[in-house]
Image (cartoon, rainbow, N blue to C red; front, side, top):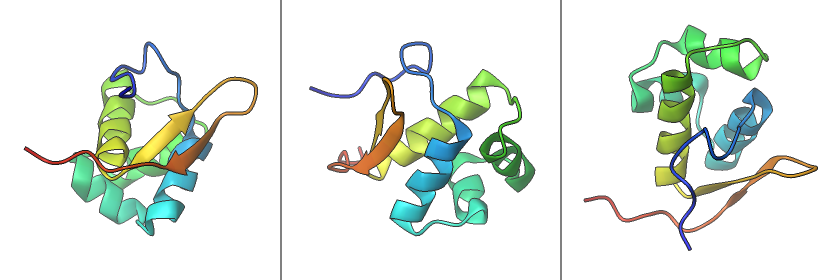
Length: 87
């Protein structure tokens, strides 16, 4: 079963993005390069500030493609899964 591809179905928070980056040993600059976003957008989101939904989706997609699985419920988190093959 693949993970939903919409932040409307699963809300992610900045702490999850920061934790996912740490699991992948990615810097904020690395994630910015992978998403086409400014580093400041990554920093803002990780600090709990609001950013555009399209920016959140770009971060989420980049992390999903690298094998991150987002979990929600009572304790939102992240874990390593299998990376999806790139087309």
